[in-house]
Image (cartoon, rainbow, N blue to C red; front, side, top):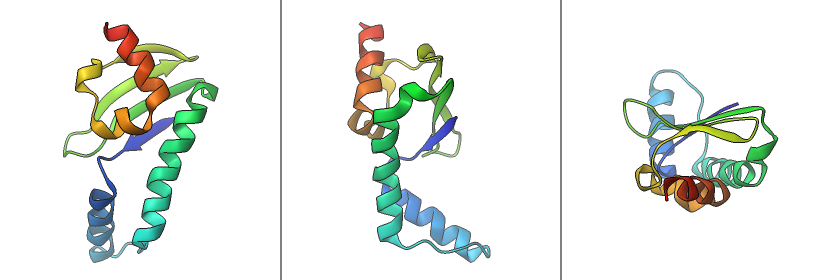
Length: 103
């Protein structure tokens, strides 16, 4: 699975506005927030069930791969200090594992 993360719901809303301008579909802010936080919560709890999991920060123009797990083993990741706040704040179980590697 590839999980695309963003720094906050404001950026998500901005992307929806841009998509609508280009003919795409609208998603209301309440639904965006529910999905944003709900998906992070579900990933935090269930990340171990995936054979392969790649977490990518798409907050900036150039997406950045933050972490890659294969069979629940971290095969690559950025340093804990380089993880964005949304990752540390919402993917706490995985953040702790990365922090332990970085020590």
